Length: 120
Picture 1 (tube, rainbow, N blue to C red):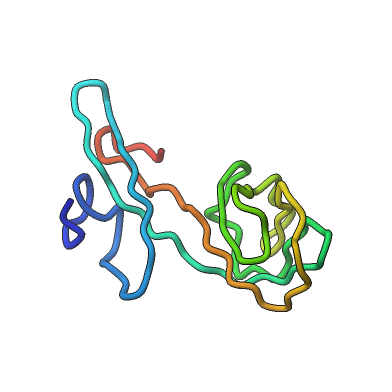
Picture 2: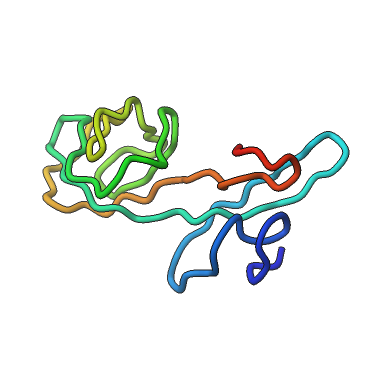
């Protein structure tokens, strides 16, 4: 995998961002298979102990129900249950603490697979 290249075998878009995490995805059209990396951004959101609702997100535009995310204040394996607005989601599990600005890392999917030109 060449993280300085764009497209299959590299990044889905952009350039490598220092101190960032990337998800590695495998794309196939049946005849060809290749890996592609997608940025896993950190967004801050407000949490309330015992509630699955996360508010104050900068954007939910690239999110979808079922997308996994991580946080020090949610159990492992938590996913997005629903997207409620442009700045709020509901998680599949409740927060373990009240935090005004928690760092949440979302597992975004690649922009396009490159084998078919369509979003994954």
